[in-house]
Image (tube, rainbow, N blue to C red; front, side, top):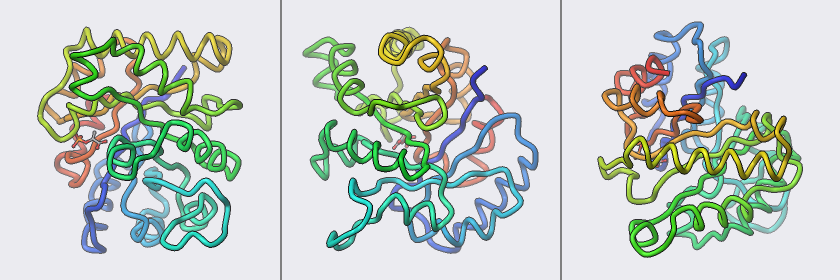
Length: 246
Ligand code: PEP
């Protein structure tokens, strides 16, 4: 049985003052039925780990380097995230794929390093609006999935987030049928690559303009095990209804 997961991606938002939102979320959900993961900017991971100690909220990073250490000015290793208090890391977010030109192959190498360090990798996949119009979305997702996910992935160290690029921050969402089609496809691909046991244990998140008022409809779709949420994860008032809808 897969545990539901509500994951928040704070992107490049949040100062220490934002820790109060995390604390408010923890107070609202002292014993959640679902897993809650917050991925703030790396600067907030250590103070958040302190502020949330004793709570059931887990922390994650938003990226890490493929190497474990070295001359990579400005970068962070998986071990550093772990050391700061993270248990997970988002990899291959469409903003990193677009703005930092990250390829699926690079995402896979980063994921291998992160998993070896003991982090759960939340690997993001998604088609652009142009790709949805011009090609078969499932071909795009299938290629990203097979190239981005490393061998040796399991239901413990891998979460896959389907995030159509055109739905992120836009207020637009695919229809439930469109989300279901992609999630069923990802599930089948994971089962055929890793075997039914592992394939069925990996959690599949939907991401892209999830809000309190559309969360229940999205979570009712088969093979949607939760959400990766951007804008609506920044305050307890916005994120809490999404956690409750799971
Ligand atoms: C995201 O960036 O991962 C995301 C899903 O953003 P939003 O919820 O704001 O669309």
